[in-house]
Amino acid sequence: MKEIKLKKVADASQFKGKPVTYKDYNLVIKEDCIISLEGNFPIVYVSLKNQVPKELLETLNRIKFEKSVRRNGLKSNNQVVFGNVARDAFKNDYCHHAAIELNDEKASLVLKETSNIMSEMFRNLLSPYYKLSMGLLNLPNRAILPQYMMEGLPYTSGILNKDNALAYHYDGSNMNGIMSSMLVLKKGIAGGFLSFPQYGFALECSNESLVIFNGKKILHGVSPIEHDKEIKNSYRYSMVLYTLDKMTECDAMEDELSRLQNKFDNPKNKKQ
Image (cartoon, rainbow, N blue to C red; front, side, top):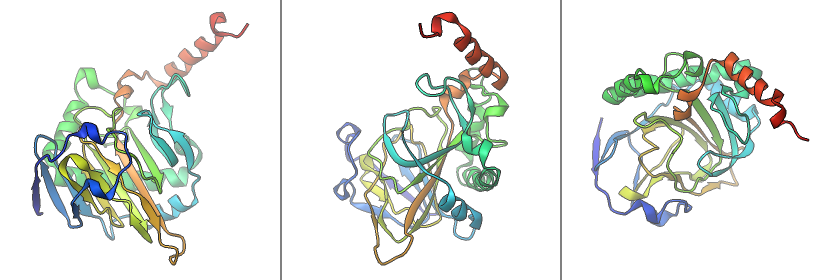
């Protein structure tokens, strides 16, 4: 696979939290390649054409996307979390499986099949970093209970996005050292590039393309998404796999529920 070497051209602080503009990059990468970044983790960009399960698009078209705010404060208009969810004192203060895993078996199976394909590409194309990911998860201070891991994969969780142009950010909740995998399905869309302003480039993110990168260490954002009015049912979906650092704090699921029940039963927590 072709290798592209890039150096830093800008400081990340001037972009963080700001929307992506076309002025932020002077190079758009459209071919399969490994991108070596000065002082950072590499990035893989590769087409998965004819490898993505046909049922994935059907699933994404039928599930309900919801508005929410991510842990890093980013507002997301259309997203669905799958896999596992860490404690959140302001929402659900216990570790648990995502709702789609419990309520939509058909969708869960399709997402699992697709996750396996994405993870296998990670293992094949960035073997040293895949081994690093698995090794980190075997360290005592990073151990996560099997029930919170995607079976056989170095990931705890995933998120589905629909037509989300995200401002520049780091994936601060991810476990340090473990790379994320992002699959894009796209039709009738202009833009929706994945931009890396420190290095002055963006990835086209064509239909059925996969990006493997360390979102915790590399500032990134999604450029404006424009629908072609002449193409019916246009879309830009992304499916991202990642590992939540807070999953190391999760107890067995039955203990999580017991702790939550004790919290509710404690008179000090009841309203007067």
